[in-house]
Length: 101
Image (cartoon, rainbow, N blue to C red; front, side, top):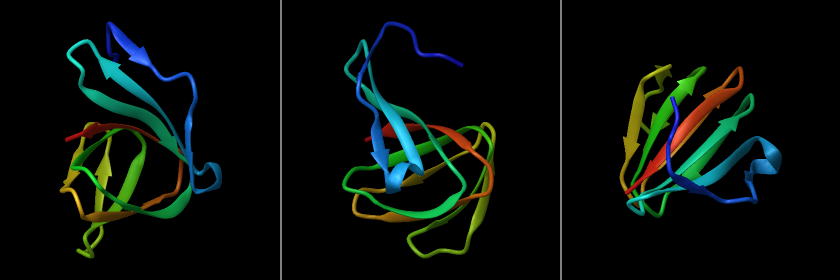
């Protein structure tokens, strides 16, 4: 439940008027991730890079590239290719890790 030997960006990434807040984490091998929280809301993320979203705590209702909405809970993840998008709806704070590329 933690990343060891990392660099963490001091300034938070704040999206959608504070409904999504994360910090960038760089692992020792140069791999980039973000660790954050999404507050109750419905949001759309348009991606320029491939992302794998891992649910750490909470529940997310997600539609990928216009597909029917699926439910993701603790320990589950979804993947979206670069150029795609996902719409997410959360009813309670959702803690996540985003794996890039």
